[in-house]
Length: 383
Image (tube, rainbow, N blue to C red; front, side):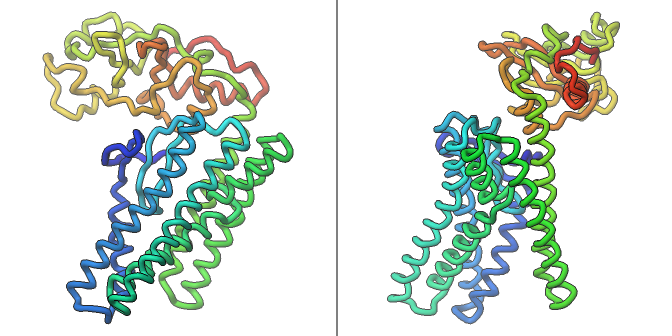
């Protein structure tokens, strides 16, 4: 899954870490829950300090869970884009899928295993702390942290995609039958069932028990169902597209603009006489780093003058929007959504220089052709 509008936090083990604004809501919610749990163990100020530190420690545990996934994936040849912390925890954004069932199983199991290990360690620390401060906020916080980690490990092992347990089901079925599509479909359908069941339990808790805690179950159920539904559609798409590469559907040698160009340069260039609507922005070496559409000139982020450079108006290309010619179309579609007439995928050669362009029109066309059983290769289209 891809999460936009994030704040970069740095790198761990070479993997980029970012946070969505909704992660702040999660920290606040964890802090409130823990403060309620700690009530009566110490003074109000001490409780809130312990609650804030405990909530941040839990976020660190969620990050460790995702790092475990990402590190094992990277060591097994799967390219990891980044890890994003958001409302429902963390998400590892992988550029492609594991190419064999054994790797799939390893990547799936290591996350819950890490959470279980952290929970066990927290219980051990709580046992030591209880010797010096039985019933104190430190001991209670460690017990809470241990319990939540173990609960998260168990929840993540529920056998439906996109949960880690669903990945385990997929990997085991894939290894047993050799049919990846059937394994992905089965895991996704179980995920849909789990999502509906969880949402119904949440509704029941709200209506019968009068507890607004059920809203969290409804949110989780909705997320599980929609994510499982997306995986179901993507699995069918991957099957139809097969090993079709970006290089086979791209527009080669596309019209590009230099970052140093001004608006006046663009409006007096030959590009105004073409049907192209989206242009990659390249540096002096021909490496793409941004994208510009005619719409960016109509709705500028900064006031436009004749001397305004295109670099000031262009939108930076996300890492997922830059692909090599040998990247599989199915993998690219899984990690990015393009807006028609606004976004594009810059295709680069082995040196990182611009080699082609793929737009939303190209992706829609290849999906339509594959659904009709037609060859995915088609003539370049105007952008």
